[in-house]
Image (cartoon, rainbow, N blue to C red; front, top):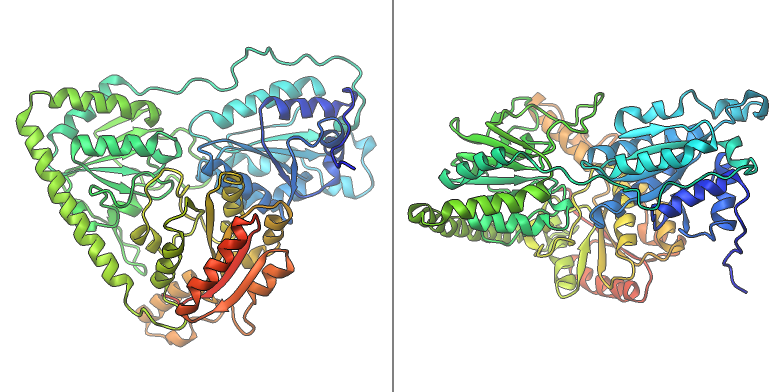
Length: 586
């Protein structure tokens, strides 16, 4: 007997809400159950035929994070998330904040009330209702709204979708009254016109600003292309390569997306020496200018320039559009001589045309660019040789060294069509693997208690593609929501989890070690409040208990490869698999 629900003719106000979900083409809905949206829930199943399918999650943060990872991995295709009234929204706040600062389009539907006091159940409907509920996340969403009647629902969905998908992308929130969902539909609610445009066209920067940037690129002695979000657009990766090759500029990938192939001879990511000779930095869709281009010590709050005093700065991107009025994710102000406000996906091909136009007949510039490309290629080769040499130090250590683990994973996946979800093993994957296609990596991890959920979203986005999805999973992150493994098993998301298990919240432990050195206190006590041992979690057993194939813990590096190969067999058979590898701290 089929589990597919039978559908009925539209008869409830929540059916109108389902029409909107279908109109905007969401492929999945993630949620944690809640009675405040029981009317919508029933309509999604019995009127909508559970299409798009609902994916149950153990925590609201995971529901939002799956949508976050999915959007990044699909170059901006949004998912829908449903959050249970006030308490579900408050559970999800950190995940929503991260979607905002990471510019991920996520369509969040909430529920509240009933707002009609006469229809509220004693206690529970009062404590789970807020005025106005969206205010809890208003400082880190692009738009929120709470329609007061079913007449306002189609317009609210349309405006929310348009705001979400207008660059720069970000999350939106629509809150639906619980009683309104459950009311019979007593009149026709006309849909928006079929020909109405869901998202406005992209914004082209001022041509005069692009002309000025082209002039500077052609005249520069050692230009740098600094990219943060350029690779979120499908064409961004290739546009970066074309612009770098035309100008002979080094390219630095800030790792919020895959912006540039790491083994390209013009890739200068991690090369601080290149910065010292740079006379022009062109930021392409950059929000954080400092982390890549400044010098600082972990225990000193003294940030110093990594570029010479005469270095000029220019920008193509969205500037202050979409900047939070509350949090300071925008970073320190970077003075620029030219700021071309607009969409880099439109600007870069036009800038390339302008550069090539200036190079026609300019033999001196062409020669300078050709020499610079050779010199930068030699720098790149030397840097990669150093990466390789450094990665082989402590090769046979037990537990496994972090770069050794990066090598072991690479050796078994390099002939596959692979995708890395989030964590890069302290950048060692970026220094060892070959990131040669734009979909290889949707961007670096955001922070603790985000990586398992985002990784599930990346896995979901690649389901059915034949690609091998790899999540290098920190132990502390998984401990926040171990039930996320069940989500992978329940919804049949085939992916490989490789535990980056240093049995600690080591990023913070490392801070305490540096501070102990600075203050001359006892470094041996720095682990207190930071360690994850005594007892040590058994992640292999945990995985098996959740329906995921699991093996480990593994501490001897020679045992890693065969375990990974066994796990990959399971993934290729359509099952998630986890290998628990225990690593050194550094």
